[in-house]
Length: 257
Ligand SMILES: Cc1cc2nc3c(=O)[nH]c(=O)nc-3n(C[C@H](O)[C@H](O)[C@H](O)COP(=O)(O)OP(=O)(O)OC[C@H]3O[C@@H](n4cnc5c(N)ncnc54)[C@H](O)[C@@H]3O)c2cc1C
Image (cartoon, rainbow, N blue to C red; front, side):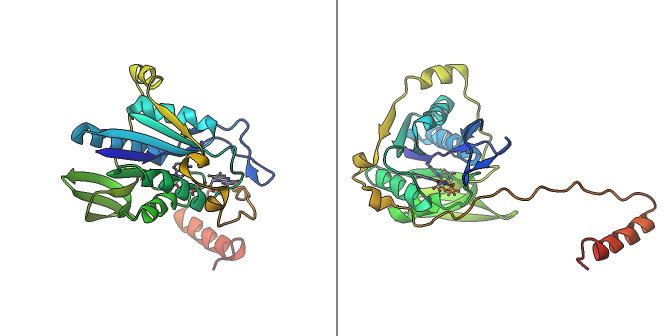
């Protein structure tokens, strides 16, 4: 089975984030594999181990994304592809990324594509479904279980706390939700092996794409951090007193009633 994982390098949102000139400042930020993509990598490895085939991880980004691709190889993926846009593009959006990924995947024999449900930085959840649309294959988002029997695939998806079971077929694109599996840590032998695994680097030219073909359809007007949260207030004393104080505060301070 030919399995592909769409993997995004993101900054760690647990770190302090600052904005400079309308962009997230990259100096000092820690970069990681988008956490939802770790579930996608883990699931891809398990599907390969059960059904045979190869797992290829693929990223649209710059040279520095090699680190996250090597981590996925160390987890157990077989090959990596970096589509390096550094020299060709300054701006991009979900259309840009999805079009580049789809153009690469159009020329591959694809059975299963796994993406993250959402990137923890951009957070639009658009790239996976857009890639599937461009490839004209079915997609199921936010999955928590994947079972493959021949060409038939049974998928359980998270629908805001409830579950929905869908039967579909290969080729298929799914996006991973938390709970799909427990991503493994790369082992030391895995890290050693990863250094020798193939990592192909491509540019737009290699995909017969011109800058105009992938020009962003959207423009970011402004980027800002949410206002700082004020410290909360704990009411004390008898419950009846707390309730009446709370009602008064809701009326006079919060002005919500
Ligand atoms: C050349 C270029 C320049 C850019 N410049 C800017 C900029 O100036 N400012 C800015 O804010 N953003 C920029 N971006 C990023 C872009 O706007 C989005 O972050 C990106 O398209 C993904 O959207 P998202 O973060 O909402 O991901 P989502 O759609 O939420 O991601 C869902 C899933 O899609 C897959 N995926 C997403 N991105 C990639 C990727 N790059 N490679 C492989 N798989 C992926 C992953 O599986 C991920 O879990 C640029 C992108 C490109 C290609």
